[in-house]
Length: 229
Image (tube, rainbow, N blue to C red; front, side, top):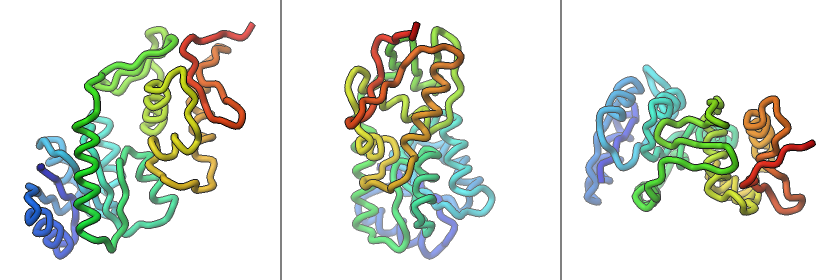
């Protein structure tokens, strides 16, 4: 398994590189954000380990640039930024996992393997459709009746999960876990605020209902859209 490590601290990078190579992984190292961006785009890596605080280009900007270019390689943040807002911000930018320094190498290794398994097991499906909404996973575009809808990365991820479960109720806990990779209730309105913005963007000027709130249960993407009279 080939891993890209984007870490500016030489001592930390050396420790991680030696540890992962000792477990049979191939590690490519970049010491700053610009080099990390170039190597991520040029190489085929199973997983990327990314620090948040980097010279040249910070980790958050780097990841946004990668996702904007369509790179779907799983990314694990490895950073000292441990606040809840930091985690949510990082995951919303397109991150897949978040590990805070100081850390144990054995946990880092386990998380990397889990991300690689998840990516390898993902079904090869490039387009999701329900009602008159079409989501293209390769182009990272969303269209309603052929007209493109501009979504932010986390809105795109939210819609993708809803479409994969179209016609079934998904709970708030399911969304936190699968869209934000948060395995506890942070007691914030992150789900509700994103859901509200996504609804508005999907409906546009029409009264078509795509996402229905099921009181006491969660949310349902309506397979056949219904327009209010």
